[in-house]
Amino acid sequence: TVPLTYSSGLKGDPNDGFVGDMANGPGLGVYHGPIYKLAKTYAGNKVSDLTGNSISAVYEQLEKGNPVWVITTANFTPVDNMQTWKTPNGTIDITYSEHSVAVTGYDEKYVYLNDPYGYKNRKTDRTSFEKAWEQMGSQAIVIQK
Image (cartoon, rainbow, N blue to C red; front, side, top):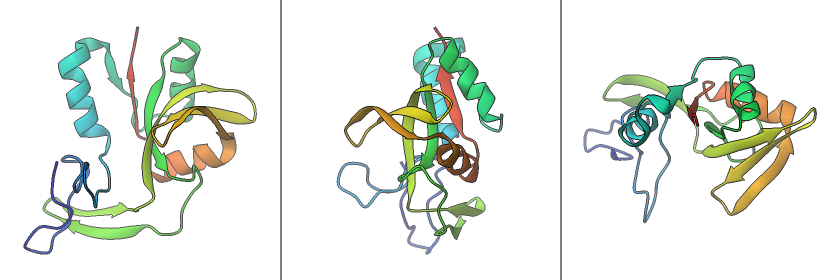
């Protein structure tokens, strides 16, 4: 974890760890890099970082039966509340609407997600989801079987 706000006034960087207090709040989230490193300690070479690839890389993994962890937005649609934060590593674009889910399936119209807000195989609009995922940097991690 890293602080939401440092004593210097700089903000936490989700590329370094979970920003804020995960248990008691306020907390924001974490990006793919720290999750990839953590997953490697448990799953070794079975872990792949798909970040920066097209959505087809995510769908290819789903077709192989591998759920894919992604960064998206809380409503699975693009947001207009992005902010630029000054962090110890420089500036980043971020939103308090950041959210992470495991993508479990897809079809022509929908993407299905295991959402930690209490939903298993939650159905969401595919086009909106893809746009939100791209807005958040096309971040994705998979542990292959």
